[in-house]
Image (cartoon, rainbow, N blue to C red; front, top):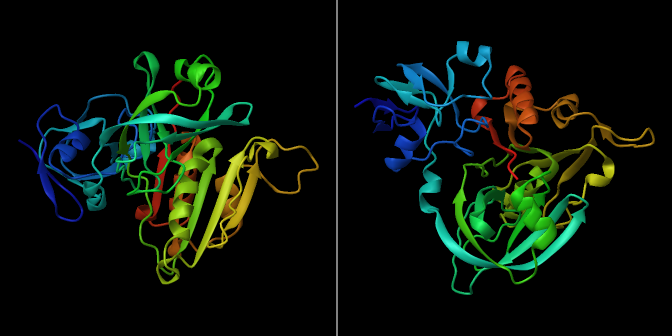
Length: 330
């Protein structure tokens, strides 16, 4: 059976025909991942040695990525011993996925195509997660959809906040925007994903978000606000991109944390005084000190791919870029 070696010298076995990611998870090791379907780039890794075979299309990888040895661990299996230039994420071993009952506490239309949903869990529930992770909502008629958690209340029975955008023709969207009511009973399964804050004391933390990708960023900011000042980054900046200025439905308001907030509009009216274009371009125009910066990108996969290529080419260390691409499902 092939042996997989990680950059921090940890090893695990991977059966033929089993994805490198699934084999790691079975061995109790957590690698960067999100969708597990080959449609985002969260599990992107570089092969140092060995050979792999493709199990499913790697939709987000280009020709240059392949030439440089990049693969998606959710979409590749080992053919022989393989060395990967990634490390496992030991922090996530303490946050196993479980299933919980939950009822809708409140559903609020914040835009014509975005609702904020607050879910309450039983008083005895102890849903633990790292801010930035996502959860599956099991809804009516067997529907299941993944949503990032928009608030930081790990270790308590507090509410779970979700920001949900309508998808045209989507079955779950028809529920959220047509039939959902307070006190509806749903089930939650999670947490999932590897999008969470790493220690960055004395460094700069930058968030790049598009659309409802601001949801996990909000949770991470709440976590930072609750962190002692001597363990915080030197600065925190949020670039939030939407098509039109009025689509910025949320603003950081926690006085405990100093945040530079930069709303960006890609299709604003002429009178818009704020930043224009794409969040990654606006960020780069600010001439950041990339050697001392951690970047967390969430939202459209196009933004994430563009940001990663631009920032790494400009000198951002690869292990200081973390992302969670929203894969559209209704």
